[in-house]
Image (tube, helix red, strand yellow):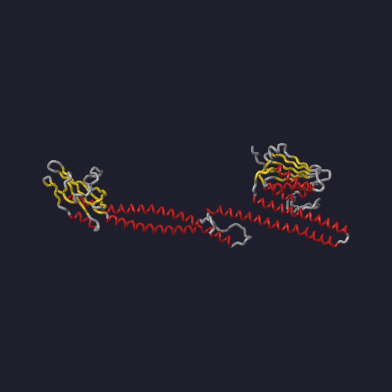
Amino acid sequence: MPHGRISVRRRLLATLLALFAAALAALYLLVRGYAHQTADTTYDQLLRASVLSIADSLQLVQGEWRMDMPYASLALLEQAPRDRVFYRVTAAGGELVSGYADLPSPPGRGDAGPADSPRLFEAHYQDEPVRVAWMERKIAGPRDAETAIIEVAQTREARNALAQGILWKGTLALIGFAAAALALAYWGLHRSLSPIQRIERELADRSASDLHPIAAPVPEELDTLVHALDGFMSRLSENLDTLRLFIAEAAHQLRTPLAALHAQMEVALDEDDPAEQRRSLLAVLRNAEKLSRLVNQLLSDASVIHRSNVRQFQPVDLAELLGQALYDTVPQADPQPDVRLRLPGDAAANPPRVMGDSLMLREAFKNLIDNALRHGATENGHIDVRLEPDGSGWRITVADQGPGIPPALANTAFERFARGPNPRAPGAGLGLSIIKRVVDIHQGRLALSNRVGSGLEAVITLPGIQHDA
């Protein structure tokens, strides 16, 4: 089993076992207390009856106490044959009337309770614990009322045996109840977790391409989890669809230039005339450049798709990204264009920053500037790249002096592999779709509009972040 793996079943069972153990311990203490109390109550009644019987046999004759021992009073305690019984009767002055002289005296005659009602206390006698019942017997004498104290003591063997019997039976009942409760809890836990097993079976029976939502009924507590899993599978399905579409379109787009490149190479090899051979090789070079640009755009599109799913945004400097995009695109243009970059005057002190992915934004700016260089650059014209504040955000504008965009293509310009009927420069038709995807991911806006006179103006608006003081 992998290290750190959590089992809900084991965790719940461990919790239930701990709760049952604590409850059993508490119930055991209660049963033990009840057992001792029951045993004491049973035998205390016999002790009280014995004391009362002896008290009734006491008489005061000419100022002296006399007693005809009622053996029936001690016979009451014969229900505990293993126990020994002791008694003592003493006058108020301490003179022994009958019984065991060394029997422990009551702890205090001033204790609460009626004087003619037996009371009880614990003591040790002849190295054994005993339970003692005692009471005062008052009889009117010649001058004053005389008082005698009667005590009857009994060892605790029968009491303890009765208490142990009650405790043992109670404990067995508790163990049986706990076992039944644990079995019921295990069954209930297994039944409660069965929806997870149904989901597991449904997912295990699916094919790798089956990403439709889970159909198995689930309880309320699992609804959020299943909803999140359905959402994950939906996003995964969309990503797989995008990947399949990308692979199909890339294969289609690459097949034609590769076939043309192969044919032109064969033509160049068959040419005997050096001049014709050179022209063929130049055509091969142009196709190779076109293929290289197509591959670069496909890789850029794939990179943007991947990073759009990750979305690890952080503060980025738009001025720095625009400078990098110009550095990567302008020197490769032929002939060299007139590109003018205008940044805010306080860009150094207050950098124009947004929350975003620097690689995606740089790819978007490179494609935007490259489109302007390829389709909008003219011999005497120039290209303006401006970065300006726009409320709480920033506006990036790239304006050229080319022919602009035909109105008929305005709705399809952002589709992948979409190109005009008569493109001025070779391309794959991915540039604007890449820009649109990046802008949408960054919750911005992209707008294309024809300029008055001639030219196209592309405007990207991105939400900004507050500059740290």
